[in-house]
Length: 74
Image (cartoon, rainbow, N blue to C red; front, side, top):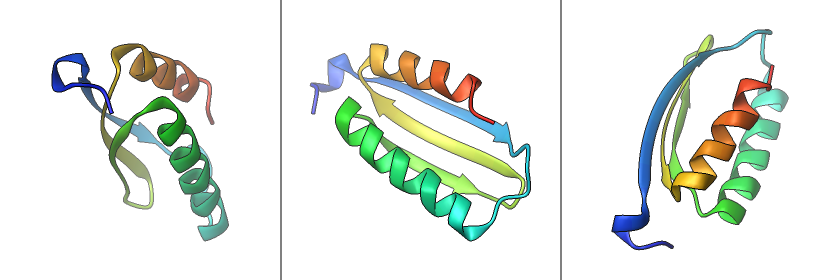
């Protein structure tokens, strides 16, 4: 894991576009765990049934790349 001085922190909310089933949430979790490990990102993701809220930390470039991917994710 990067040194604390090399970490950036970010939080965001997003609205689910489609009704999500448990299997959809499981796929999101699996992909997030795999990608976050690869990118040295840690955090917390919550889902209320309509809204996702995420608090994340990691290398600034990795967080920027993650946000770009999420912008295109339905």
